[in-house]
Amino acid sequence: MASVAENVIANKLLEAAVQLFATKGYPATSTREIVEAAGVTKPMLYYYFQSKEGLLAAAIGHFLDAFYQRLREVLSQPREPYQQLVELVWAHLDFCQGHMPLARLFYALYFGPDDQKGLVDLKKYTDVGHELLMQGVDRAVAAGLVRPDCREDLGLALHGMINIWTIAALNGEAELNFDIARKIIDDLLRGFRNSL
Image 1 (cartoon, rainbow, N blue to C red):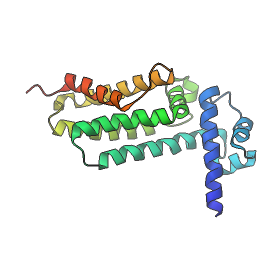
Image 2: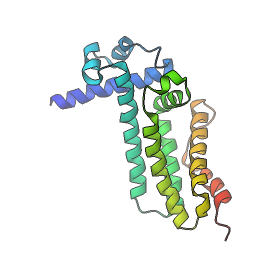
Image 3: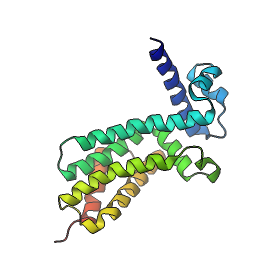
Image 4: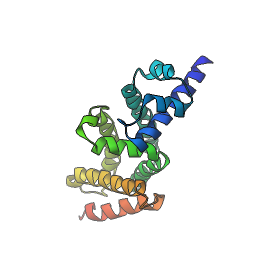
């Protein structure tokens, strides 16, 4: 019973931290603000996460682990390679849309000042995401949808388009939907299609 209560407290802290870090920035957010937003006491933050930096790392890890689990589920379902690519892109866009504060925080850390880049090992997370996306690309190559020599280029282009659309959504310039995922794949495959 205690572990359920502990998870609730830890989750409240994670969600409050992501929201505050995303809106105020990591350096400008105090631990006092986080615990007040979570409705818990400061010792609880230190009990679960040891520090504000530990809370940041745990928040990124917690949410991205859930995201990567979703990508693994997409890859585990039997689909033809084209549809699987569309579903992988949609999983990215839908997750970001459902977790806008996390997406904002991730991009702020990734593209932000150098002194904040060392707070969390983002490469560890981006490598996992890249590997999962490339599994879908490899299936498209094996099916003849993409020339083998374009494998890496397609992976990079997919990441780029996902980032562009997510940033547009964060700026209120786009609303993400399944049709956008399909459009991304259709547009990129036209450029990377096997011409044989």
